[in-house]
Image 1 (cartoon, rainbow, N blue to C red):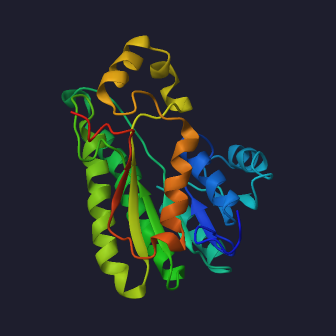
Image 2: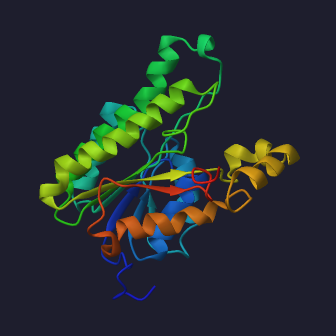
Length: 251
């Protein structure tokens, strides 16, 4: 990418959580290709190191392993980050547990809220303390925030809360010129969805239900993240960008 492009992230430092595979990995790759130094996060240090190693051709990508739901581990990681600061935070970690309403214990619900909502709140306020004007926070929500389906209640609650957190942080941090936005992915053919992508009936359903009539490829998330992280989005905050192939727009 040309360094003087409005989309260039040259000189920026980014942390992407839950980035050892799937959409987090693709976001980390896209930010690195745009010129950012990327800290690739995962709970398992070996997996994080391996994922970072596969992205050396994309740019400066380094592993930073910690559990986003472990307050002590998060504090330790941010002690490391404090040395060189942080410009971009992508809250990508997500936990999903599809079961009927009565099958979830309260501990199950607390765990999902802790990972999907409380952890992004904690990381965002810690990251904001390290950011100057032009800082960027990007939350990865889901179309399961504004839209609902049976068997997915705790996840929908958490992602809806993450949308609200996005707006609240945008209001809170705007005077410091830190923008806070979200990306709401639709149906992406990631490793986690491998079983679903091999089901012809779901392919047929997506052909009818989405404007583009197909699954999204994982790398189709990267452009949205680069845009929101870049100077091109300097006056965009409190916004949820749907990357769903027209799922929410298609009747």
